[in-house]
Amino acid sequence: MDSLLKVNNVTMQFGGLRALGDVNFEIVEGEIFGLIGPNGAGKTTLFNCVTGVYAPTEGAVEFAGAPITGKRPDQIVDIGICRTFQQIRLFPNMTALENVIVGVDARHRTSVFGAIFRSPRRKREERESEDEALRLLDFCGVKRYANDLGRNLSYGDQRRLEIARALATKPKLVLLDEPAAGMNPVEKNGLRGLVRKIRDEGTTVLLIEHDMKVVMGLSDRVAVLDHGEVIAEGHPEEVQSDPKVIEAYLGTGGAATDGKAGQENSASDEPGTVSARAREPGGEK
Image 1 (tube, rainbow, N blue to C red):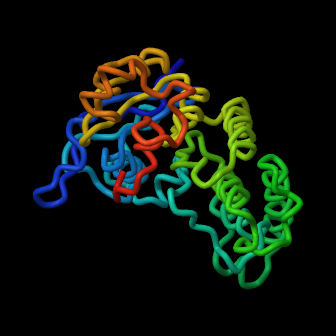
Image 2 (cartoon, rainbow, N blue to C red; image 1 turned 180 degrees about the horizontal axis):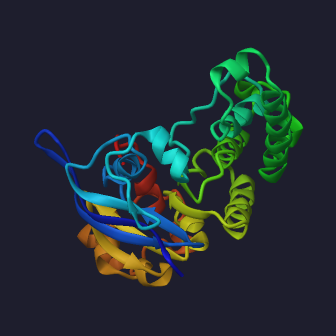
């Protein structure tokens, strides 16, 4: 498969703080790629570098063979990358349908005058927008809430709505930042099915997730960040058993006793497990 996203020696400095240091990895078209690491590892900072929120201090990001470093977030959306956020960012006083229409509208080309004077093109785009928004709400399992305000949806359904809005921009690559956060086990099972459907429909997925059962069960490959550096990359089974990964999550003592990071029985909330440590509050990821 062809490489879709390449992160080349990306470093991000905030004054004297180095949030990312010489990060390298690539994502091939059609895969689900997991990005994990303890709180403060730099995962969301990396998302921000890919999506144009930050310009890396050093290094470059390529998408579909072309450099995208330094492009604005709206330009990043235009070339085919969209994201969700760790903290849900819906329009709370708009309906679910209207939230997704905002995403669809990012691909429209009607001029300002065409919108003001309601040109035939604009009317056609509005009809198509509503049809596409309803299709995506159905695809993400929240069509029954189409006319409900975004703020009135449950937390899990708000996550699904945000994914639908991101998909409305027709991305080639979608970045999901902790999509399972706040979900119960049933909702997480549904989310796994949704992410696989997104990939099967032709959209490549880059996933940040702290729930080891979710990320290890979904991802084709996984990269692990710790203190802003990639310490491991490979298939989930390889990464789970990597001593550096176990130490990053559990400390040296944990590495000697636990033997594998992200096992299903390590996805509990018992103190000292990978999952529990990953969910502790700690600021920037």
